[in-house]
Image 1: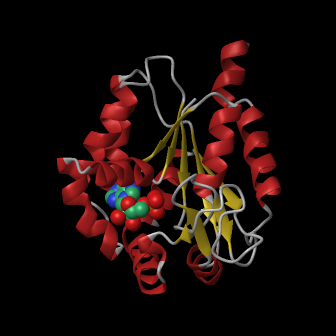
Image 2 (image 1 turned 60 degrees about the vertical axis):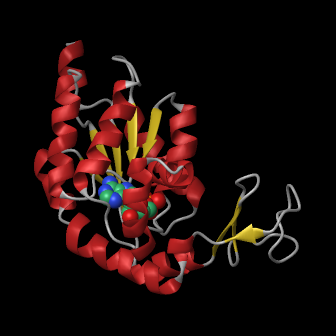
Length: 224
Ligand code: AMP
C-alpha cells in the first residue's frame, strides 16, 4: 500500500509519518529530510537545493523527482511507501504516478492534513530541535525543562532556519499557490481522505490507522 501525506508545513505530517511508518513497516520518504541530508552532506543536489530551501521556495522538480525515484528504487518491489512532503505540485504528482507505475503500483490513499494557517504558523515558529541528538520540542506544546537546552543530552537547542516567521509565511504562500491544488487532483482519483490536523496527535494517529485498516472496495471485490 502506498500512502501520501499532503498538507501545509506545520500540519504534523512528519511526526505522524515517523510513527506510522515504523508501526506498519513502511518506507518513510520525506523529501524535506532527504534534501536537508543532501545540504548537510554538501552534495551537488544539496548545494543547488540550499538557496531555494532557505527562502522557503520549492526546490526545482527535476532535483526532487530524481531524489525520490532513487530512494524508491532502493526500497524493493514489495515495499509500501509513505510519502511525506512529496508531491508538492502537479508535475511531481504525475512523476510519482509514473514512478509507481514502473514498480507495478499506484497511490492508494492520500491523507490531507487540514489545519488553519494561524495554527500552522504557531506550530512551526515554536519548534526547536536538538542539533546533537535530534530531539524535538515546542515552546508552547512541549517545552524543554530548561529553556534552550535539550532534556535528553544537555546540548543547546536550535531552530530550523526555514522556521523563522518570515520564511514560514513564504512557505505557506507557496503551499497555497502550488500544492493545495493537489487536494482536487487526488479527490478526483477517489483516494483522498481528509484528517482534522488540529486535533491531538494521538487522535490523528488513530484516525489514520482506522482508514489504513479498512479494506478498499477493490480489496473487498478481490476477496469475493
Ligand atoms: P519540509 O521539511 O517538507 O517542510 O521541506 C523543507 C523544504 O524543502 C521546503 O520548504 C522546500 O524548499 C524543500 N522541499 C521539500 N519537499 C519538496 C518537494 N516535494 N518539492 C520541492 N521542494 C521541496
